Length: 458
Image 1 (cartoon, rainbow, N blue to C red):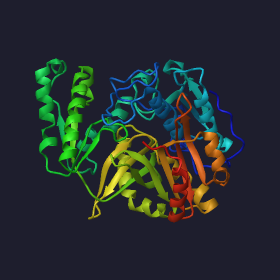
Image 2 (tube, rainbow, N blue to C red; image 1 turned 45 degrees about the horizontal axis):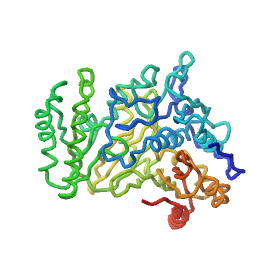
Image 3 (cartoon, rainbow, N blue to C red; image 1 turned 180 degrees about the vertical axis):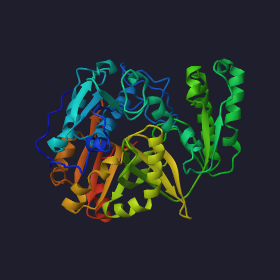
Image 4 (cartoon, one colour; image 1 turned 90 degrees about the vertical axis):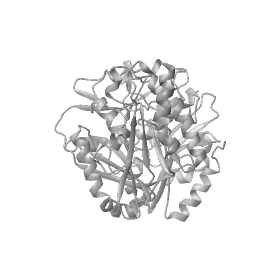
């Protein structure tokens, strides 16, 4: 199903900066960088050409979407489109879907990037499989998450280092300021997990703290995706649910253990004190020499299950936030630089009632709220729109043509930006990510109400 490009409903967007600009800072290396945007899944293979990663394994026991095709449209299209929105004039590779006759996803991606001024528009390319990625000499790829199928290509950051930096276990054991945590590692050796009795005993041992620890607390799996392996334990029902789900997930992870994978432990859980306070997402860039470039500080939108749904930004508060979180950002940049990382990243920070700042999670990649920080001039300075919100994912009851017709004036005024869009193979379910902006919080709430009328429920 091809998508006819709509009549003009957009204004040229000029970003404050781009990833291309940021990668060039403090960088004497003449190697080129190609962005390869794809996110992994834990247990459900999305397309034939991308097998599940076993070396770089992930966990998402609470995942709500089980359909491989819809997952592919989310994690190979909509999220990669969003992450690529701030790329700038550099090569960006996205993966095609299994149905090669349906090129609608290509049209949707091109429409997303057609909103950006041509000098900042990514050089978009689609490939059917990883082996189709051909790099010129002295070129490396930058990726959101390490994936087994991409390890044959040179990376800007060593994939094993990248994977370890993403680990919640590594964060809990680091010297960084995190909530008090207990790491429960497996004591089984590779091969022992195939003994069913030993496996049952080990899972029971590992989950004992989940069953007995006083509430409230948090349980995390080391490589959980999108909060789908994080459990907030407030009472007995939460405790029971976490124990049941973790029992199944730990069984799966323990059975995946091999001699080669014992070097990057994934068969563990983290029990962590639940800190109450202001929770924000910080987005910044670490240059090749370890300098931190602040992008944004955004309160987060989280659903009842603790899953991320987006972020909001107050542009007039950003200078204050930059000062408030400057020390911890510098600390993080130094920590990342010492381990060989450079590139975009985000962290979740919570500040308790005594003013102590704790790192709750680290995303060593572009994060969902990153584009908000790149649009300060577009929204706040040029249009007087000082409040903005980014939604992800937003499932809509209408198609793109209808949506753009309804909100044509908002799109033309630069108040509404579609940062990712795809529909299912039947063309019925539309999933998108978008940014809404307004002059103040009350007008933004009214705008949100207008858009969410078309939100799919259930």
